[in-house]
Image (cartoon, rainbow, N blue to C red; front, side, top):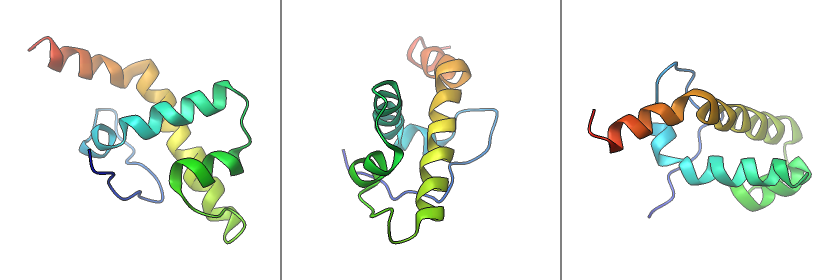
Amino acid sequence: MTMQPFAAEPPRSDTLTQYDEQHLVTYLRLLDAAAEGADWREAVRIIFAIDPDQDPDFARKLHDSHLARARWMTQAGYRELLARSAGT
C-alpha cells in the first residue's frame, strides 16, 4: 500500500471520503497513540514524518484535525465501511 500525501486537514464530510479510505491506517495509528497517551509531537514525528518544531502550529493542526476525523470514524464512518463490505 502506497501512503498518500496528507492534507493539512482531512475533509469535513458527514460521509466517508476517498481521503478517509486512503488514510485508515493513519487514523488507526493516531487512535493508538492517543490511547497510549503519546505526546502529540511524537505522534506527528512518527505518523506524519514531519518535525513539529519546524512549524508547531501547522503540526498541531495536522495532528488534531486528523485525530478528530479518526474519532469520527469510530463513531460514524465505520458504518459505511461495514455496509460496503456487506455489499449494501
